[in-house]
Figure (spheres, rainbow, N blue to C red):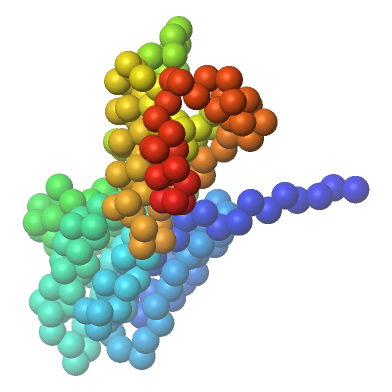
Length: 257
C-alpha cells in the first residue's frame, strides 16, 4: 500500500493580484499547494485585491513570501490606474520593510505593456524579483521555479567540517545570528539550561545569543525554537561535574523556562 506523508504547510505564500486575474490566481495557488505551501488569497468585489491598508499589513505580516501578479495591459474601468499601482507599490514597500520577499509576475501582451513593465520595475526593482509571462503555462513554470529558487537561496548552506568543540560552538553562534524562522539545537547536555562551563567563553557566547533570541521573540509566532537534550546525561553531568558550572545560573535558567 502506498502512503503519502504529509509534513504540513510550512510556508504561507500571499497571492496578490487584481480580481480580474482569476485564472492566473488559480494557477499560482495550484503551484503553491503542489509544493506543500499554504496559499493565502484575498477575494474582494473591488478592483483592488486588498484595498484596506490594515489587511495588507495582516496578510503580508503573516506570510513568508508574496507572489504578485500584475496585468499592466488590462483595461481599467471606473478606477484610477495610478491609484491601483500606488497600492501595489505600498504593498511592495511593506513587504520589503518586513523582510518578506516579493516575487512579481507581469502578464505581457504587447510592446506597450513592456514599456509599462519596465517603468514599474525601474521604480521598485531593488525590492523584488520580477518575471514576465504570456499564458498560464509559462506562469506555472516560472512561479514554481521562482519559489524553489527563493528557498534554495535562503536556506542552502555550504558544508563545513568542524574538528573541535570550540569551532562547533562558534559556528552555531554564527548561525543563531541569522535565525529568522526556525532553530533546532541538539546537545547531549544543554548549554541553555546548565550555562557555560568555567573558562569557556565560546559556550558563554552561545548561551547569551540563544537566551537573547528567546527573550526578544516571546511573542513572535513566526519563529520556532526547539532545544533537544539527553536528560540522563544532563543529570550525570550535574552530579559528576557540578564544579564546572554556576548552580545559581542553573536555577535561574530553570525559572526562566
